[in-house]
Image 1 (cartoon, one colour):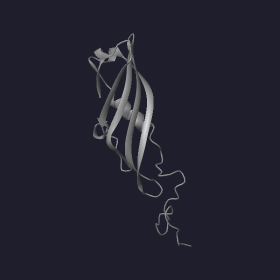
Image 2 (cartoon, one colour):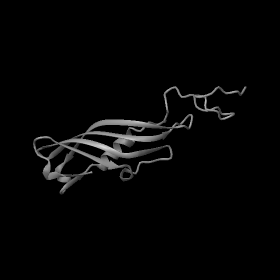
Image 3 (cartoon, rainbow, N blue to C red):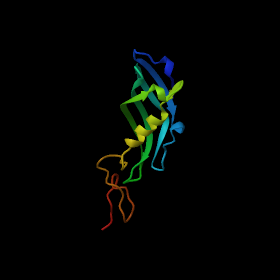
Length: 135
């Protein structure tokens, strides 16, 4: 998402946009973004800095670490960034900062629900949906 620096003034401006999942390149074997990531951003210039308040929302398909079932997770995040105008010529590309934010907030263990029972290590039955017959 490219933002022209000359459009950013002392008064905050709002920008809405979308970033395709393929542009961010953060898919793994356990999780992949679905569709486009929606971005709402408020930008304001303060002397030599640009303050940006981001609100992002996206969906991803995730495979549970315990039961191996796939599920869809809808996520939202709000964060603030500050940019020095001397670091940019004509435009500001925020894709790397958004990508980093998503990766830093990604959970270590992906679970379909907090009390997921997983699968039986002996017979492989999903313990969330049926009772295991193993002894």
